[in-house]
Length: 144
Image 1: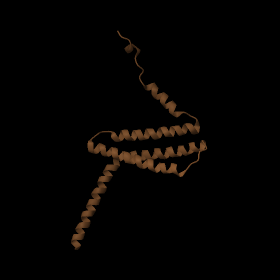
Image 2: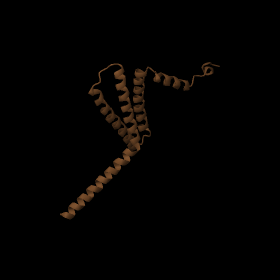
Image 3: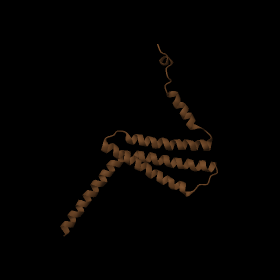
Image 4: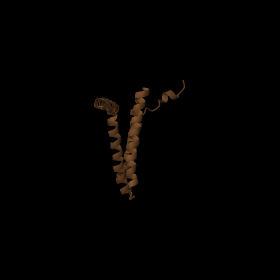
């Protein structure tokens, strides 16, 4: 009986070790994306609280509960995209999803910054980006 139990626990340890190793190898490449998403959500929450105080709005616990749900949903989205990349061999799905998450949270931070400071950083960034867009060539519009 003792030999059977030793074999069972050895097999269980091997199974748990392999599972843990596979999980770590799956999560490690996307860990910086988790930290980025968490950092931006926390930054958005901080600037949102300051903006709410500036507007003299009441701050409630429901808003802070949203913080946790946003983090969980963003992490689930990142994990799902990583799985699609690995299983279906679709490149850059995770990068696109994280880019969308980062842009969403960053725009919210900039909106809160506008409320607190009055500086329209979003408009300035948009104006700078529009300068880099290529203007249509007037010669191309004319027919010869």
